[in-house]
Every structure is written in structure tokens, then in C-alpha cells.
Image 1 (cartoon, helix red, strand yellow):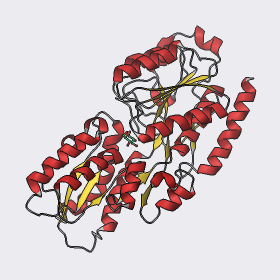
Image 2 (image 1 turned 90 degrees about the horizontal axis):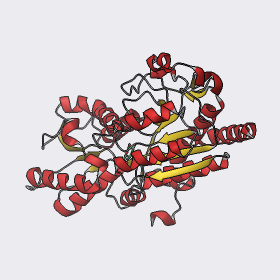
Image 3 (image 1 turned 45 degrees about the horizontal axis):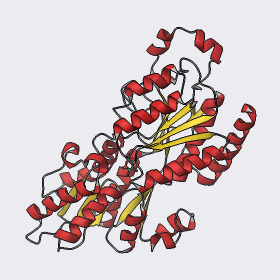
Image 4 (image 1 turned 90 degrees about the vertical axis):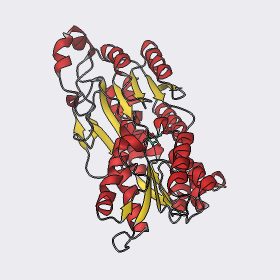
Length: 390
Ligand code: BGC
């Protein structure tokens, strides 16, 4: 039975990998997470393992067995997590697993208790998109001692050596693509400027948010240093521009304040660098309510339906497309590899240190979408139908 499941997993993964072409560049492999047979692992003293760095992706204290996979998602409020959850469920079930899929309404205590239930309910592996990457240390100690491998999904889980692997889109590249889009659209290499920019960042408790911010700033900094880009509000630091919980309303009210303090006299805002679509939506609402100047370049991420509609209406310039089908396929493949004790595909063993060591990661490649290519990326690929975007 186990073998049958494994071959189904591998077959599904191979097909999926061929179809989606996740990643880019060559894949490395990491040591299997569950090398030790259960009997040996049980007899082992835990001390030696605890000292091992996370990068080694050591075998959990006792390998969990069974066929159920727990999938913990942050919230149903944002479109992308609904897609991630249902893609994961469909692909895992197609590969022969039973799935316990839970959403936590962006509430950390709810997510912790859902994970506890997954551990107590016999899940043999956990896939977790955390709400607050810093808040799962204690609950994941139980996962580790129960021998349950953990994959951090999209967001890195910090300060715990219970995380075996991390799968995500290249978060830094998300930011560089947003920055480069601004450079290209405004022809910053040739234009004199100065262009006025305001920055709306992500949630400070989400490790991804720093990577998005830094990727964009690294591309834009030379133009800021040259005086081609200025930030009239003076709000530039990651800590100052953050949007707790990625909330649309928070991004909106902050931008309304910025607009009334700095742009009410008719000054043009040229660039609204927004880390993702939920924050971009807030900024777009603020622009609609409080701004009469020329419409700025507005960036986003996720290609949420509301934002793609705004793109079609000229209210958002671009979004980053992270095909959730790609990430789900990759993670299902990793689950199969972990559960069978095979080598696990990773393509980055340097970037993501969660405070206990570098977590071996698989980074999928994001692409930008705008008015010129959205049909090909989003409709021709079957991600959305024409009707979804009307
Ligand atoms: C994800 C983004 C998403 C944001 C808000 C981040 O961790 O990578 O795709 O827009 O969370 O949910």
C-alpha cells in the first residue's frame, strides 16, 4: 500500500513538474529527512539530534507513520490562501493521502490549536503557512518529538528546529521584479525625475515581507541616491512602512494620511510601491478617495481577482504572479519524498536562516503580470476564466 502511494506520488509529481516548470536553475537535493527506520529512531537518545543544525534536516526523533497530512493555512479572507489550500488538498488526495486542511482566520491561537489537533489526530506530516512566523516554536516541539516532519509553506517558520524544509516563491525576486518594473515603466535610466514615491510594505511578523521590501529597495536605491526618486512623506524604513496583518484597511488609512499631508496641494504621486495586492487595494482606495493628480505606477503581488480587474481598469499597473498550482505541486512532491525517505528536492541552501540554521528550501520563480501579458499568464493557463475577471 505504502509503495503504491509512493509511486502514485512520484508519478503525479513528475507530471506536475513537467507541466509547471517550477523553480529554474538546477535542483540540488538534501539529505532525506526521515532516513532512520522507526525502530532505530525510537531507541535513540534525543540529545545528539538536538545539537544538529537544521540545515542537515535531521530525522525527527521517531518517524511518524500513516497517510494523513495536515495543511494549516492562515486565513480564508485572502484569495490566494484559498487557492493554496484547495490546490494542496486536491493534489494530496490525488496522490493518495488523507488531508486535514484548516484555516485559522489570521488568529495565531487558533492556528496553534489546529496544529495541536493535527499532531494528536495522527497526521504523519505537516504543511504550514504560518500567520506569525515567530509563534509556533512550542507547538512544533510536540511535532518534532512525535516524529512529524514539517514543511514551511510560503512563509518561513522562525526559531524552531522542527522545520525540515521550506517551499516558497523566491521572495527577494518578487521585490526585485516590482522594483525593475518601476525602473522600466518610468525609464528611470534616462528620465530626469524627480519622481515622488510612497512605499507600502507587508506585515512585520511575516518573514517574507522583509525580502519583498529589500528586493525592491535594492533595485530602487541607486535612483533614490541619485535624487531621481524622492519620498515626500519621508517614510522609507521597513519598520515605518509596514502594514500589520497585510490589512487593506490599514494600508488605506495610512495612505490617506500620507496623501492629505503631502499631496493635497496638487503634488503628483508617481510611484506607489506596494508589496502585495491586499495592500495595493488599500492604496488604490485611498487614491480614489483622496487624490486628483496624475495616476501613479502601482505595484502588487498575487494577481488577486480584484487587483487584476483594477489592472484592466488602469488602477493598478502590475502584480506578481505566483502560480499557487506550482507551489502546491512542489510541496506535494516534497511530502512524498520525505515520507518515503528519499532525497528531497531543494534548490537553495543559503538564503533562509530561521534562527536555528539555514532551512533547505525550494524556491519557485515568480513572474510579473500587467495589462500586456495577463491574458496569456492568467487565462490561457487556466488560472482564471474570462468570466472571473468581469
Ligand atoms: C505571501 C504573499 C501574500 C501575503 C499576504 C505573504 O507571506 O507570500 O503572497 O500576499 O503573505 O497574505
